[in-house]
Image 1: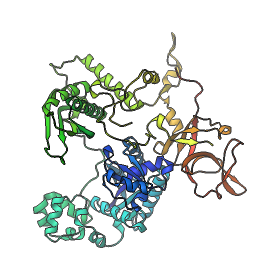
Image 2: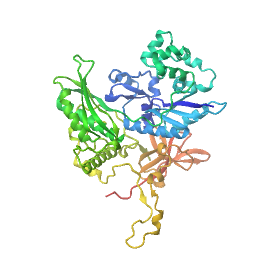
Image 3: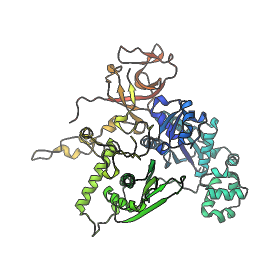
Image 4: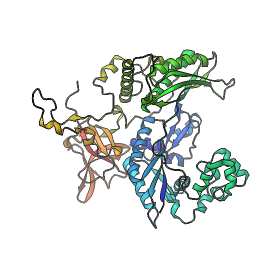
Length: 425
Length: 157
């Protein structure tokens, strides 16, 4: 019998993480806000039941939230990242193959037993994750990735499925496909769904059954694969090792607009520091650096500019990248513009070990080695004592433009100073 | 603290750092004396392969193990003092006799799970605190099982 594909994801992941480590939040409505405390990006089931909408700007619904006694949190990426790793390593021993697809979802492959569905297996895994991590998850099972994603939707949408749905073992899946609008199929973009709608193809069943030649003419091999997946033939393999990143980007909106060049320099510098740290963690060096800045697209006189330069020698040394980035900032800056966002893009990434020593290299091999050791020490200190423990002067101290995270919970699983309290009283 | 906001360093911060170990490497301690003053090599040298890793000893299930900080004196009798570090494994089943972290009135509470006259209750390890009969308190959830307590005896350095 063919293998089954599962799509496993956590419900309301950010809000669930907050509840998992803070017992005062259990059973209470919780929402988590996006960067800069902008919009609601995650709602606990209790908050959902109160009718709090997703994506609403916080300032618009602050009064409503307060009235209902909703607990509001800023995004705590240290906590969510750690809980994500725990979730994935809890799942891993229970499946044959696992592809971590995002911070809160994974595809898995596992053998399908003859003459039986996987509902019992999935329910047991679901209670185990709930018990061991305090996270609610949903599991959709099917013969292909596209159908597994669809089954996962069904598992979550219908409460009587209790978070588990096996589409591969319920006879004809057509009724379920019929209930899925074409826009909601995994891998169908806006363009393809519009094209489908124009042809009267409104749901997944119709897409599955349409003439494949027509689909191939429109969407090529991608479209054909999509259709085969909907027919229950697995064409999209699981990717166990994530592809090496070709770019890394750090960008943020400011808590208030910046008009001062010195402040813009500080902001860009602090994103470079962050991006360089990411690069070293990924074991990569960048051959090119691009910085960009823009004003608010909602304000009159919108302005957006990017500047880029190649590095003579690929690097992940913060000092080298800072120097390059700060040389680019004057090209972005315009007086009297109110900048709302800036970012840094590191490109042409290559593995660390690939670097050949260059005749024109500014540093000797020994100097190079010492620089690398210094970066390692800085990363280690920041990891251990909290980001910002060792800072680069170019970033400024306590800048006023820094991201707003006024309702941040503690780094309860990653910092000794932030551990939850066990009361012995 | 905001992720991207740098913090002003003061002299106090620098003092706090003390011993630093920049990387999250398991701490390996050699099992036998590899350094011999002079002459013959130690016959034990051939056997030195593994070190000791405290993580391995204290953490059986890394993904479901959490650290908590103890506050209060109600578990003194069980050797758990105020300020101790508690290693809690959420994957273990709570059984009578084990020390558990329970969720009581929205807070983590440390007690020993016990069976008394056929009924489960949560007991302190300090006679100043009365036991809690589970059937009398409404909603009590056992969050995890305490597996180790780490109690410092001297300050480092």
